[in-house]
Length: 129
Image (cartoon, rainbow, N blue to C red; front, side, top):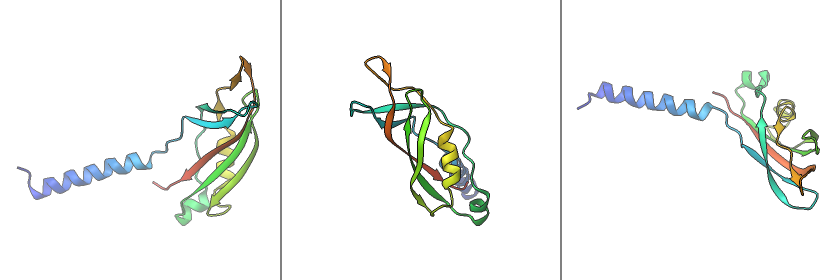
């Protein structure tokens, strides 16, 4: 039988583990894009850079998100990078755009040829640890 002190210790340890899991950023392994044929396909994200939390937002204790839109060239390069929505407005835009710009993707194919993809969206969430 556990003492009250031991029970409290285990509860705090469990909460600490949960907070570690919640604070660890995770990103989708793939995004959806539209091919020239009009088909929507999953495009694998093969590399993501480190996400930088804006200093001002961190200092103020602000959290938020940015929904980024972009296209992918047939060479796998990010093109037409744009902010679709952000909360709070403008606070995280620059950091989110730089983050997504650094992504590397598997190159989509149609009939064995590399093709561009359009109408891709990715949500970048900013949460303080």
